[in-house]
Amino acid sequence: MAVTWSRSDLGTAGAGTIFLAGKGEVSYKEMGISGDFLLTRSALQGTRELVLHLAAMKWAMGTIRALVQFRIPDLLAESAKTADELAVSVDADPSRLYRVLRAAATAGVLREDTSGHFSLAPAADGLRADSDDSLRDVLLFMTDPMMWRPYENVRHTVMTGESAFENSFGKPFYDYLRDHHDSSDVFDRAMAQNDSPETFELFRDVDFSKYRRIADIGGGRGRFLAEILRHYLECFGAVCDHPLALSGAEEEFSQRGVADRATAIKTDFFEKIPEGFDAYIIKRSLQNWGDTDAIRLLTKVREAIGGDLEARLMIVNHVLTEPGTPDFGKLSDIEMMTVLGGGRERERAEWNRLAADSGFLIVSEPSPGKMSLLIFRPT
Image (cartoon, rainbow, N blue to C red; front, side):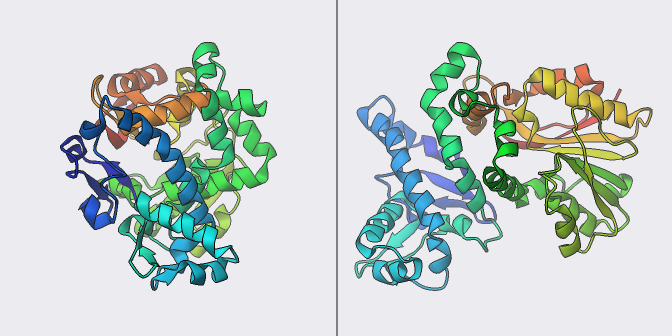
């Protein structure tokens, strides 16, 4: 379930819609979402209610996290159940579980009928483990304590430039993951779900028959690469990442039937990028680094390409809208700053500058305000 607010969310109260991948625009009513809880911005702007609404999102997210940890969306996939029935399945106190369930119904992910039975609202599809559009692991990662604590002190980052994450945990984010394998596993599973249908859709018009050797830089377990190779039988590829991130890649390739055409290469991509590929893909990760490190990485890609002017660099990343235009990326940019320190989301002009400073020229027209495919040719 990929959720974005539509422009109708800026209209009058009750006119809001949510866009669901594969379903299109769905009204609050169809989603089972309380119009009182998710009031539209124009109805709240400049009022005490807006402040209370924003603060109360903590209550909603804590509730939904517990719901997912109990696997309630999976237990309700086939039929509606009461709190007592669900409590038996998850070995929980029925009275306290009921309070969580009714809060989740208010937040819009469940529905409660007058007989006390709970069922899934469409919004809950993305919380089921077996859903094609599942973002279950993404939600668990984003609400993990290691991702909540830095937001206690965003001000520290603004004042000092040090990430609030490092201030809280004593080390940078990626160093922390290397030392805490459970946290690293949560992160890796979330990143695998980031290779969503929307990511594949961005590559719909790319003819990979022109790029028979594909390198997925920072591609983790290689799910995206494996899917590309399944569709282009003449292609070969490699996923290139840190050894911990590559855990499970060989199994992924085997399960998807591409083990004979895919390999995993352990590398520090700030030091060296493997040579000899026709297309280098970097997905949803360059926002993790500031301009200096991003240019350093892209320059390594340019060195790997060498004199092959037909090779292409393909980057999947959010492109920010112009100043004054609301954009989800302007919120996620705070995570880049607060958790990662030097990371940042970028506008089109900033992407152009990164490309020029790294030996590339952008040859695509990315759409601002959304995740886009930026294609670069070497200069």
